[in-house]
Length: 342
Image (cartoon, rainbow, N blue to C red; front, side):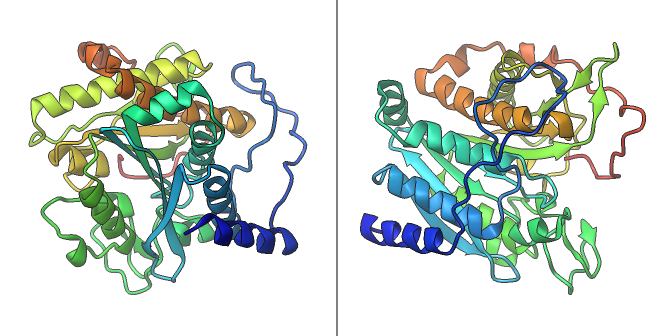
């Protein structure tokens, strides 16, 4: 899309009242002290997400490229945004589970930070890496605030009959996108195959947990655990996971290992089998820390890109990932849904 149509599109959204100024930041009692200049919308509507992506593309003067990679079962667009022109390729995916939203606004903040403006550090970064983001992979699930996509004809192995598929169980490399019963998972498969990323990071959310000493976990991470993933690819994913841990811990969070399964259809396993450095990030559901959770995710996106750009990710000792503390029990009085391990 040329710049003129984008500007025209912005005018339409402004006249329709869809450009909303940030609300005043709500009072918080976060797990760790937080200072933010503005409040980020944690759950942008379908229309607002489209507007924000195209606004960023226009403001970036072409550095950010926005594409519709397909449509959900109910016809909602599934968007991807790409920035950079470097050799190292990084893919982020947000909101495969519709009720796990915070990776989506984090992606918008990341795009704003690296794609808008003319800072020397961003120019240098984008000369080294190309970052592709599937932003809100599950728009139908987002509309319903539920985990699955929407498919009333679903009779899934993973999901709920008459409701929908658990998209994050349908990335088995042995299943071609055209044969994938989870429509939106097939879209991610196609995008991944066309982009051929070196790194693939999948953003989710979890409940509230503590470690063995009672300290609250703010995020968890994990690498491929399927035995078919090459050891060298597991080690690379572990190096990325350590970068994630250090970035979020350095941003005031506390990262644990996620207790995930080894099924090949889980994204971190499926794309690990394809040779991606494949990592899961689970942001904890901490309402009083929600704004900081978004910024933690944004920080991890930036840290991964920087470490990939300067090569420092390859200098990390993979064994450091094994030292990331295990996730402990759910916090008393909180509700953790009976989700299968991601």
